[in-house]
Length: 514
Image 1 (cartoon, helix red, strand yellow):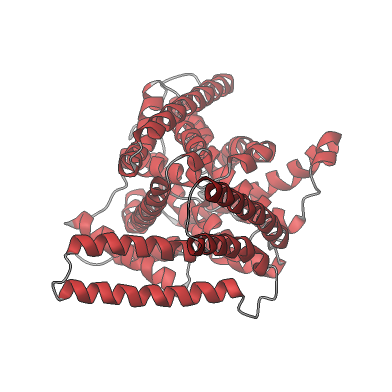
Image 2 (image 1 turned 30 degrees about the horizontal axis):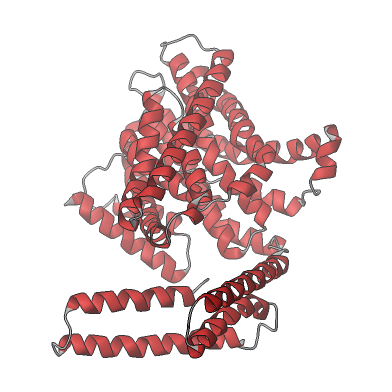
């Protein structure tokens, strides 16, 4: 009952955030923290196994399905600098700062803290950037970073944890080798699983079965890779990228169902996790017994976490271009405003908290590390998350290629419409098809071919395509009313209503392209 109430409450807060156009993660954390002080409320604890096995894989898989493999491939160098270089740099720098600032915190335990808070959670940043129209390159970098940085951070976490608990001699060489082995193994497993699942789905020919099989992929990829001592995170990401890239070969019903299912899963899991962050903060503070010196040190470490991202992104971006002439020729000069937004989009989230919860009790300074992790997570969500939309607007960082993208879409749409008309003419030559039916099919093809061109015209006037969609939706609503009334009068049964309703819904979905 407690879990059910938590889920329902989390969804209610998320719904309010959407209604008010506020960042849902921030509101969930704030309300969760406030609710945690209500008398009689049970203590909530974030189970690391629950997060790493049941929450992280579906969130990564869903993000990978909607990501562009081609965009990530084209930006693999800067993404790698963020997902690998920045994570390792943050681990070392934050660890050294924490060791020097926090009284009595051993270096090995401080490096565990550095690894725990190294990976940003780009869920909130990507959502804000998409809503405010960040340039495509910035969105690709943030998304690609979020898909790969968890694997690097978790590997660094395991190496540092082994040193802190005396399970193994601390060695950066061993850590690099482990990172390479787990990364290559995770990528290979994810690719093989993606190929196998795609081949099976093409032969099933059943949208429901294909979608059901797809829901097993993130959990199967993660558990299989972890069982073979490789990166489960990368296995999930690669499988998702492969299946998303090859989604056009699947059936239409599979694509429609998967999109709806994974978006619903995303909202449910993200709402639950961020609510748990707020609810658990009170008990974490109570266990650590912080004094003034520790709270001041927490502020310094939080500042280091924010600054280290700037200290990596700006120098490495310009230094790489200066040292490698072919990079200067191939890539456009990065805009300082975009680099500032990417540097500020460093909110921490669920992976950091799950890793902190997985620290064994015998590690020296465990309570302090867990407290600092919560301070950094909540601090970055509140400071950076609250100010990121304002920063984007003030700097004027917006997509400047939207007109070009619409033009490219219009050109391809026109070519596709012409191909469909040519195919119609071939079918007309093969059989006796009524002329009125042929004219109707031609009109539909022309409408689709012209819709994108009309988007290039004047935006303040309603285009013919927009008028068509508006009027057709009203006609569909009128049809629904008739069928529902017929069902209520007993003229048709619910099975007929559901079948017709699905046909009307599919047509409205086609009309309601964002």
